[in-house]
Image (cartoon, rainbow over the protein chains, first blue to last red):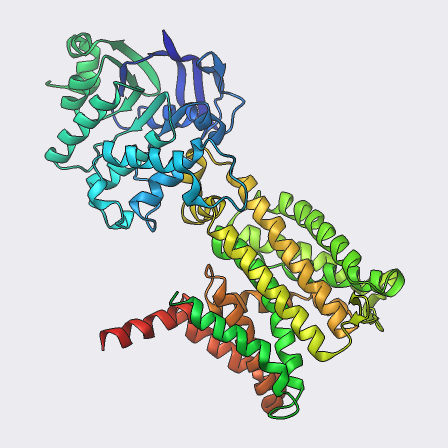
Length: 246
Length: 315
């Protein structure tokens, strides 16, 4: 069953057509990866799905709901959370505060002006759970901006996770990571896929081939192929425009 | 506990301060402190907006003036009691802040600064030319209001205590907000609005709410100023007042709530002492002090205090 469905999605910036007639489906409980050369429109695709940019044409449906009319925060509350290509966290807050603020989105209590933040026991619980899940418990009280790059990326994944999503959009989660950190991230993504559907943009082909159930290939804003990792690896056009010698 | 004891001592000193007037010092200083308390209320409200959500308004004089004119008009023409005009002023300030905020928060950075400035200028020009509220002459002979049967604010001391209590309650409310779950969202907006938005928070709504609260603080301070001076003039809307509010917050330390209170005290006391020696030139000294603080302690007096404290601890 498709949790996310795009039909004929296009995005123009003036005369520049960044996405053109994209049709895609993301199956619930699966990891779907989007690959393609730089400038293929992968991040723009995430931006239109997450509401950062309005679509120029086509429709985006998430759990049968049209996302076209929703604002960014409403899309998150609908159960679709995203991470960014460039680490996007609260650098001056502690790791705990970063995750707490994310988890607070799903507080069972109404947040009024005077609700003491430490009285939200369900939020505390969710924060602790996420902290453990992304392996940042030892750095709970550390200032987020002082963490290593890899840990900052994991924190961002944790923040998206703490919002309680059903679909997670991860934009190059391993960019700038050492091989060891990338491997840890791959394990983390595999683990997360037990509970949430993942749409992943990634340049590290080892990770893409290892974790993906389905791969979509973009080039110059158009979908040029999709299929299982094996099918994509054997696709001549994909090899020509992106994979090269793999 | 470490912080509560000095705060209680300071509060006790402030409560005792009027008793020493006319014995150890002139009663003028009671009135000077009252002015500081009134300004501190609007600056604490400004700090909620600028210090905690990062939206620096250059038009907060708008709320100060509106609160002052409305309360002044009501006291003069309707009732000798303070409470009905105060309630109406708080509500009206909230409505004005909602309208100005709704229009302004669509912009950010310098555009927000100048949009709020433009709105305040509109009020300034209107107050200067509208005969119904006295035009450039303003409103005079505003009676001192009653707060309880038989207790009006005509005495210097009664106004002092009323303003001190108002500031104390205003500060506690602001502290409660900033330490709440909502306060964490405010800080999130200041630190990284995009991330806060993509976590599922309607950041515009958050900023608008804080803008309204901040406007209500401004309106309340204006109401007190009208009753304190028994006079309201268009100068309350002047951009210099908005500028002073920013300077007070920055000098004390934005995003701390205590800093803006210290900043209000510093600017008003410095202004008083220096203007008696240097007339209008005192602004030069204030400007130099402001530049030094921005250059060497951008976090204001609060950050400077922390630095000194750390140096002492290190020996």
